[in-house]
Each structure stands twice: as structure tokens, then as C-alpha cells.
Length: 83
Image (cartoon, rainbow, N blue to C red):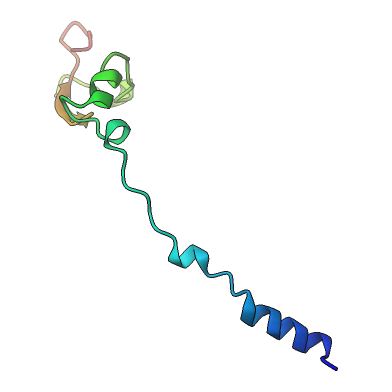
């Protein structure tokens, strides 16, 4: 008669549960994952405000940023307005 330990060993051999190592990765959905200019998701996201810098980071020296595939600059004018 098999002992409890033998039953466990046999169970582990039969049911090794390695599916997570064999799973296929889904393809990227470009409709919702691409945000560059001219893409559906990018054009949709450009309709909304996005915080891109803290006010403490912005000065009269232009700060270069990249968001949604576009290179932009943000700065303060001499009148302390954001440009």
C-alpha cells in the first residue's frame, strides 16, 4: 500500500502545473496602447489635461518634457505665468 508521502509525490508528478511558463502572451492592442500623434488613443487623450510637471520644477528656464509622443517645453514668463 502506498504511503501518504508516495501519494503526494505521484500527485506532483502527474499535476506539475507549469502552465504559467507555457502561456502565450497576447499581442499588444495598438488601438489603445499607442499614444503618438495620429493614433486613436493619442488623439483621444489629447482632449484632456495632463499634469506634466510640479510648479516647483518650472522656472524661467524652459523645461523639456515628452508626453504622448510629443516633445514640449514648459516655462514661466517674467510675469510668473506658465507658458
